[in-house]
Picture 1 (spheres, rainbow, N blue to C red):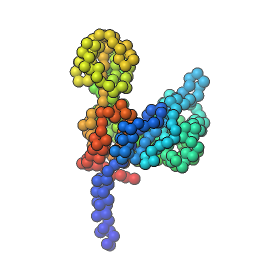
Picture 2 (cartoon, helix red, strand yellow):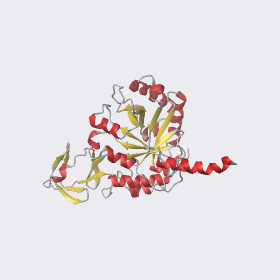
Picture 3 (spheres, one colour):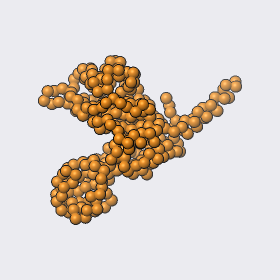
Picture 4 (cartoon, helix red, strand yellow):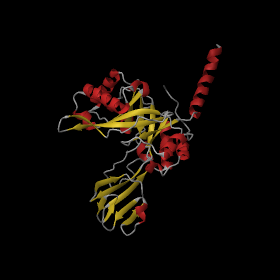
Length: 344
């Protein structure tokens, strides 16, 4: 009888502890050379980052030879921060999934190349592998077969996957990957092809539109949020270029750029722009998700589901210039009313 009386109290106590517990943080590393400088190392330390999702290569489709091929293979000495868990991440294009008919063979090639990049002792040093793919209804079965094939090879204890917002909202249509855990990617949510788009990286309103599906998601999730800034360029009403350089000093050059409104500019005289030649009447839009929007997005997400980790995209000195470790810590651990507790 005594144990029954205590049970509700224990449940409430455990729930309260979970709500007050700071979430863990991490970063994505999406460059082809792993050599963090002093600024990047400082962010890892001062945000107490527990995890670094290290993109080790991409897998794309070779239309000439009709086979999967690796691209953007990581260059690394293998010297990783001792206090950060490294999760190797492999990006797989949807067109590769669409054309391949042998996911078991592709799984072997992925593991073989992972060993070449990271060393033979994968399971001991890197117990988790993440696969990053924006699969569709037509490629779902192939992708899920690939995940199972990699699991059967036994080189990694657990498989992590990335989940796009449309996959999060419609799990009955897109399916749930046969993985152990995942990261919900909350960026690139808008229509970058549209010159009238407000912010194609993300806005609270676009993220909110994906949060009326069933919850919680069937596998444990963290959430990835964007720190990057870029300039999108349009010519004759169509997307021309995306320039990832976060430098916005050019906005003060009124002899070549005219302001049209918030973060929007028009070329008034032909000019060079970070290696690209721009013509009069080309349109430019600066995009970045401000801190207040990130905070609002996190609040909405946490009211929907428990997310055990906040992962920042990505670890790059130039993109981190607009942020501080204290601000990222504040965002990741901001209290939220209605914070969901873990169902796992």
